[in-house]
Length: 79
Image 1 (cartoon, rainbow, N blue to C red):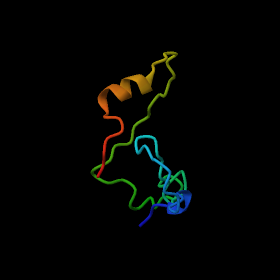
Image 2 (tube, one colour):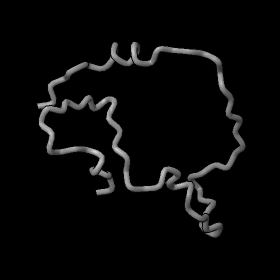
Image 3 (tube, rainbow, N blue to C red):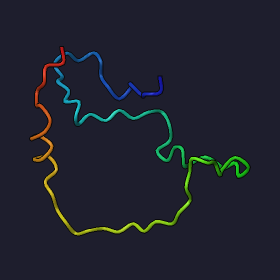
């Protein structure tokens, strides 16, 4: 219900989609749910943890597509 299907042209019959590389965006903002205001009275719950994290970048290159194709069937007949 929440997927934005307007990005797909459903009238074309000659278009072959590779679902591994197809992105369907929903109608929510890109920051959802982090774009909402926080109700602090209901913010802390038993199933959450509040910690500081450090994000860093490793200068390492890997060919993800080559490894991906080895494990996923290509041109798999979905019918």
